[in-house]
Image (cartoon, rainbow, N blue to C red; front, side):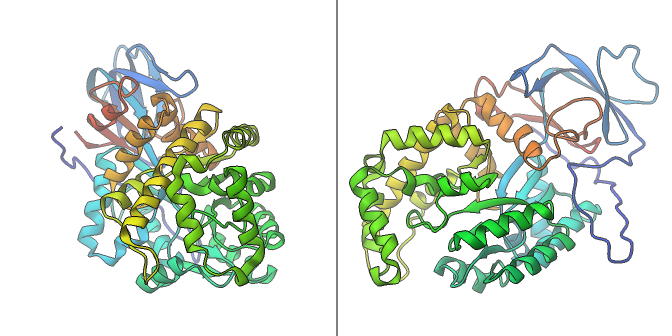
Length: 455
């Protein structure tokens, strides 16, 4: 597809005093008329593309769908020739703050590439609050073209921070923060809400009592919670407890692993966890279990968890692309311990377990979100392909990149599907993505808030 930036976003969201903009799916304010003719529209409810019709867009919103003859006077017309239209895609697990370590030109180039691939909204799930709030606001004001950014601010944990989070903070200070008390939780969540965050992310170490308070406090401030339990094993808030407490989105395919271990390994794992600091680092035990891959699992526990997860309605964002990237560029232990070969074998086992759990959860009706754990549009597309390889249907993958994240944020009346009154973020594809999810790459036209950006 030949792509060119036809026009920049002309969105103006004035600030008043200390008011902070909370991003929506997209906004109106445009006066132009755009008529997309002869296009097949994907309906998430039916999971199918309809017969060719016309879409009329006015002031950044979809005004009408159907046979619009004669065409409205003065409308810019684009004949799609029976091609396939979906709502703008979401990536539900990015970290855009790290882009700001580069030049403004590099940031602009990456964000424009997201739009060029049809990705018009993201959930940013961890980064310095002021950095990501500023980037979100720049996009919202039209200073830079990019996807709408719904953000969480720093990853939150009780002290001490995991070593991984300490390393991240050295690279980009403020990416992770600790809370030790109810007062700390309240102060942090107040800051997030004041800066325009719409979600908050917990990771790693949490006392169950403080975690329960955190969930209630976040809900009181209309902040949606995502949870990354931490390392592959030894979770302080395991996913079965998280689901019972009402966590609405759980991140990473490995998250459920400790809950679904086979009997002998679960006894060993739980005994280690109960021993606390006296038990040591647990690296050897973790690598041994990781290396077993799917052999470490209890099929009965997997089935029981999948059923409970689907019943409770929480979303799951597997980020399968993470393990794949680690296998392509292996991670080595920071100091001493296991060999690189042992880590690679463990990572392969983690990849296989993640694929198995994703397949089982999707088959049980758990809503799968598309997310990459990075800041590269190629990661979003690759994640969709990996989900298909794991057994997730193209219909569910499309829902997980459109209607599911919009509903998760309570924005489903405004975006997530192509319907009258909703935001005019439209991606038109040359080929049917329900036949092969790889066809998501066949972008013919991108419309952002009613403006043709790329064709």
